[in-house]
Length: 257
Picture 1 (cartoon, rainbow, N blue to C red):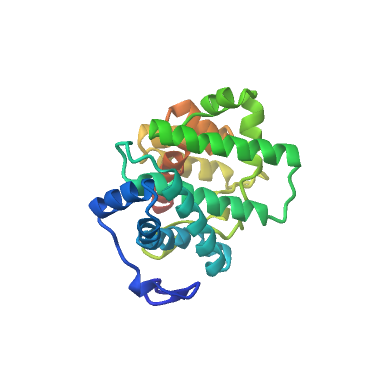
Picture 2 (cartoon, rainbow, N blue to C red):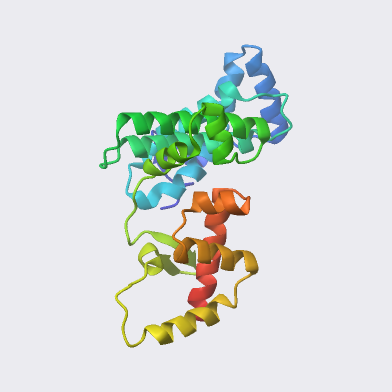
């Protein structure tokens, strides 16, 4: 599907306007002064941003119109809450807001039920996470989120992980020129066998092709069974960076194998 040639929610995506950073800044200032026309122009001028983000979720077979509308809610929240005095681009602030809104929608429509107390804690944690991200302009740690909430770190970590939506074993996690790497490719079989020793040798050789950081992430992820969030805490980077490094490392190992 070509997203610049379709209609979503009655909007012809080919006609969507693209604003420059200067135009966005000026519209944001006018919006802060109560100019509703500037607010509408700013929202409409950032619909392409929403469109680009929902493409990340197309593998879930969700209705694109629904995702687009939910993403627009996140965009409106970003417009209404952005601080023009911050030395940060509007898109940098808006992207996590839009993604967060879409993920909340997907979690609320998840078939797996989570207790209300855990869900409430997770939502409060995500709200604090967005606040800290806006203040620090970087990904906050679980300890910082727990401290702001006045909750134990373990409870916050458990709640945030509990609302992560499940995905199919055939969900592509990496695609290199058409050669997709699926989630099931990352799962191991602990039943053993005569060929296990040979596989271990091959895996060790493949691991040698990785950087020190990539090897550490693969070791923590698949040999010590840590979550991406726990690895991010231990290494001192964001969960998104851990995810990218993990996918890149797996792709290297796949080519080596």
